[in-house]
Amino acid sequence: MPDLDLSSVLFVALALAVGGVVKGATGAGSPVVAVPVMAALFDVRLAVVVMVMPNVFTNLWQLRQFRAHHLPRGFALKFAAGGALGVIGGTALLAALPGDTLALILACAVILYIVLRLARPSFHLSQDRAQPLAGLAGMLGGVLQGAAGISAPVALSFLNAMRLERPVFIVTISAFFTAMAVMQVPALVYYGLLTLPLLGLSTLALAAQAAAMPLGQWAARHMSARAFDRIILVMLTGLAGQLVYTALT
Image (cartoon, rainbow, N blue to C red; front, side, top):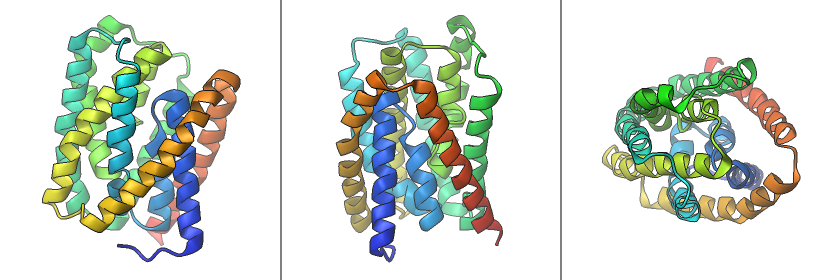
């Protein structure tokens, strides 16, 4: 367990709550907010482990909530199975690599996500073209999820390019995250990264994130998606810079 002072606890709780708002509004993206904050305050391994319970239960909830909306099952299965396989290899990297290397991987993942969101906002990938790429995209996203706690540069960019409707996007990404979590939890236990005290901390993180998700659902109905997105991207830019500075100094 890390040494937690009050200011750190409040900052992490705020990051988890903001992640919950993002999750409620878009169906994904909570680790993109919460993981870099926790990694900047503590380290990447702690951030990945703390996000385990939020990843499991918030995605199961959204999977059930939007179960009536889905792409053809072959696509969702390939995408989720690729993620489940990739997260095993990513967790091995999480256990083996030095902390500074993990921080740089996380920073690069965040920067890549920002660049992809800004560089090609109008890029469109048809379902026919996306179908054969689903397994590979899922696997690459799973490796990033296991090693750095963020699959967004691959997984979210891939699904965003398909221009899916919000309910279809949410159920697809929730199935992907759930499949990864099912494999990630035993892998973290195997490598000795998920302990009972950290499981308790992760459960508290779940409570903070779940409490904020209804606000995100409200924001999705009343706030400009573009403005919301830009706020998150500006915040992520600062966090990525902080991670690079910490890793190199």
